[in-house]
Image 1 (cartoon, rainbow, N blue to C red):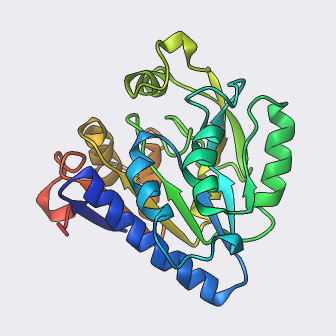
Image 2 (image 1 turned 90 degrees about the horizontal axis):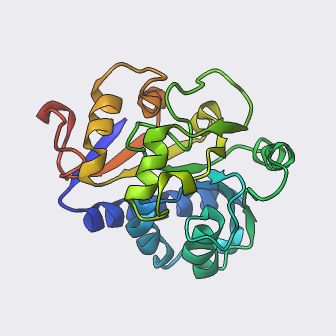
Length: 250
């Protein structure tokens, strides 16, 4: 696993986007279609802004899958990840093939239908983040490291729901849905490449636990250390608790 620490959130996002663009172009040079997984949330804003502005990516040949979504949240809600991806990714790139998780429909059917499409062929690149509680997608601790199901229906813990309020997506914890659809940990790890963008001081404790602690379901994103082709982009704030030996500066 490669860990890169950049001076600020925008610089980290720009570096991750440059890396992602090169990986996408390489995947498209080898195959007619590149299949990707897209993450959402405040931590991904700079990354997606830079990536969607990068020239030279043949977006109509890219197929996108959705990482996670709240159950029961209307698409018009500011916190809807479908809304987030449509506004910040799909419309900006003109990408034509995308599979969004409709949390307003029967979640069992959504999990089955989108999971079938996801599992039909390998994923080239997964873009992910790490939550304040160490979650990977909406796999809160203790995460299920064993299931082979592509998507899961999960219960969101208090720390996860609190993060959503603190980031301004909701006004109070009771407004945050208690359940969500999440891509499973094993499914994420099946991706040929993983690029994780994790800026901000509020992520420092989770970053330390996941990068320097035990690989454990109690620190879900720690499992990224077992993947042969993962790169993590931090800023100085999110890397502030790491030891110098594990954090090469770029």
